[in-house]
Length: 238
Image (cartoon, rainbow, N blue to C red; front, side):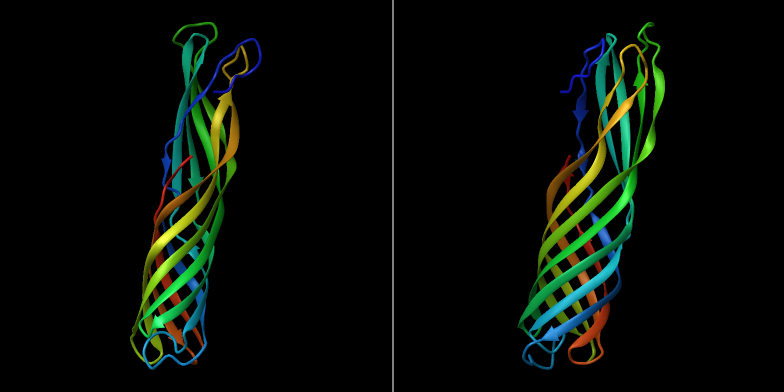
C-alpha cells in the first residue's frame, strides 16, 4: 500500500495478474554450426563430437499484458486499467553441445531478446464535489522496455537426411529472466480528477520447456548453416 501526500491520504492496491510474457515462437534468420573434435562416424550432425550453434533470429509474436487496480478516494472508488505491449523483434542465441552417441546429443544454451513496447491506461476518477459523477481519464502512452534472458538444457536427437543435411529435434527445461515496465500505481492530486501514473520495471524468473527443430546444411565437415523454429513456455507473476 502506498500513501500519497496533499490534503488527502489515500492508497492504491495493485491486482497483479499472471504474465505469460515468455511464451514465444522463434524463427531463425541465419545460423552457423561448427563441429569440433574427433571424427564420430558417418551418421549424425555433423562429423565431430562437439558442436556450436550461433543463431540470429526473430521472436515473431507480439503480446500485451493487462493490469487493473482500484483506489479509495473522496469516499468513493477510482478504478484504473492499464495495458503494456510487448513487440516482436530480433533475438540472439548461442548453444554448445556434445554428441554422446552418433544420433544423440546434449546441449547448453543462452538466448536474449529485448524490445520497446508501450504502456497506457484509462481511469475512472470520482468527483471531489459530487457523488457518482466520475470522470473518464486517459493515461497517455509511454515507452516501456521488455527484456528476456533465457538459459536452457536440451536433449538433442540427430536425424541425418543426406550426407550434408541433418535435422535435430530438441527438448529440455528453460529458465527465463523477464523484465517488464508496467504502470504499477497512480497518484491523484488532492481536489482533482487528474491521474499521475507511476511506471516501474518488474522482474521475475519463469521456468518452462524448450522444444525445437533445427535443420542444418553442412558446407564442409566443420562448417554449416541452417534454420530453426523453437517454442519456449513459461509465466511469471509481476
